[in-house]
Image 1: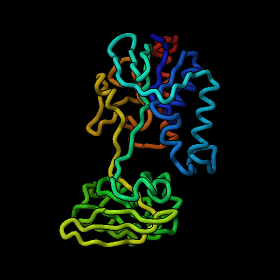
Image 2: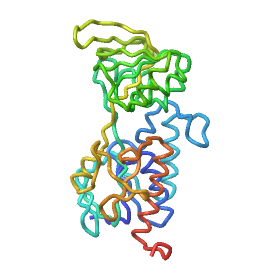
Image 3: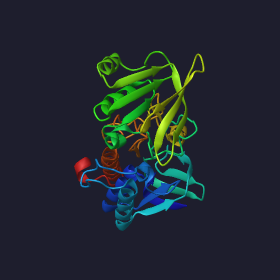
Image 4: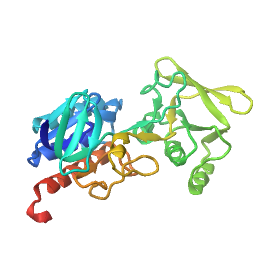
Length: 310
């Protein structure tokens, strides 16, 4: 069984940042990733809000993070899925599809995956008009027509944000009232360029090289309507990739996001979490990097017990 000081699960922005700081602090550090390193960052067509880069593709930014991480001496094993965690001992056990590891500390940076509508055209036009992040991709739709799908706080907040960028914003909600906070609903009512399609749901997303039209269906009558739009923002929530952590005794909130304190600590000693898998309210690359850094430095303090933390 291989033994490490620190094992990081997930090689997205949070995991790679944690790896850099873990290794630079002198910890023998391993990163395990079930897919290819880069995480959600690598999926972003263009990133314009990460400090130091006016504009960079997500894939290029992820590649730079990965190169930096490897240069510090971190061992990264991608395409190696973690299958089980045993975290209640002094040494944590991490089981994968290939083997089993031990570590003194573990950082969970497994991210989250967006909830999809599951309609025709959604996967085909992802990154070509279909988006799951208004803050990330909204600026690409200045002066255009966009559609937001959802009826909760996230959907309403995204609609308000997009209403300051897009020419028109259509909101599609399958019910006749929002599930959002009253303040958000009031703010939406004041926006002249926002139109709401109540009791309707998306049937299909159409286009050629990019999104052109959306087919809507009225829930009660099956009436079909087609609306011309340039972009579709799906805002029906996320699923945190926290199942294995929860099975190992790590606490999560009602939305399955891992609970952390200001130092990224979970309820299990020596176990930390960073990035989109946590209950931090802001999901951005810069936030994930900061959380990864904090988690790695806390893991160092837990392992090495430096004088300034005794």
